[in-house]
Length: 431
Image (tube, rainbow, N blue to C red; front, side, top):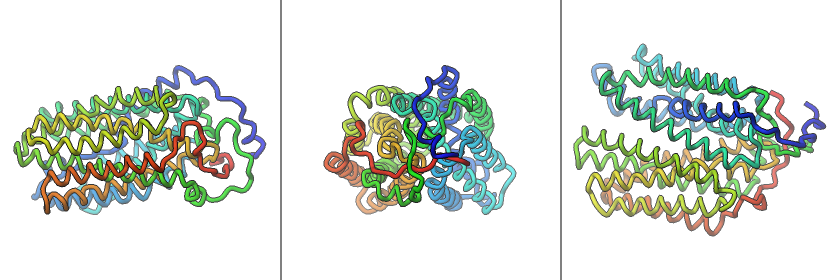
């Protein structure tokens, strides 16, 4: 691919209605597929396989830890791969097939290492979805419409999560935990069809990797990691995302443990299911609002609101042990997570504009947030054991408060491009 072609980018085609409908459907149907079995893996291994099959909380937890670590390591390479490839539709379809196949073979496997291997494959394949969806969206609509479109994507994603969770919960009542495998197969098939609705020609691969409308004009580009590491606002944003997830990730699990003590495991399971579905429903309008107003309001005030709501949520948990109060407070997760999901790729796009490494940057920031999430449960658990649930919730709230202060004082507004890190533009993708 010649450098002349890269520097000849002069326009962004009007996205076709078919491509936009395809994006809606893809985000809706892929919502459940992208995370594999998720929490249903533990339910299946413990409830269906059980001790007789050699599975308990410890072995199940180890499988999930191994898969999670492998998936975390895959985040940045997955983003770089999406930057490089011109076959993004095929990558998404291949990822959907890989994740689904890795889960559908579980009923036929009993060996610990084989089960751990399949789930590691599912997490590696799942790592491509977030950067691929953001890249395809950017390549279809261009940078000017990107923030609005990402909000719509997130709205359909959360709606898909809510519907699939409700279906899984309802169908499992009649058919047992095995129903999640059937549901995943159906959703994977639908997501492939949705991906094919987006015409290959509607995706501008140079725009999709963040080259911008004027392309690149540098023949010698540093490595992606070196360029990203020199982008100080991006590195700061990655640290802030890690803090957000350090504060957020353990809140739902801690509430679930508290509800188990208060209401018993049967009622706690139902209440947590209500928490998840209701929070996802709240995320839909929040994500839509953020996408529609991020350009007018700015990224920074909205992201500060996410940190503020997260801190408030942690404090409110300490005011009452009533299960309905705890479930009601959990609805605030829909506000914080809805904002975060809609703004995360937008801020990364702001900070990498013109550098051609948008998706590699997404992967790097996702790695940082994954580390924060991984540490969150241990952080909260140690405090719960030593000082109780109230102290843990306050500690998580204080962490969110720290993130608020750091974002307020250190993170610039990225909407107008003045805070964009000076990345040397990379050559157009040729893979």
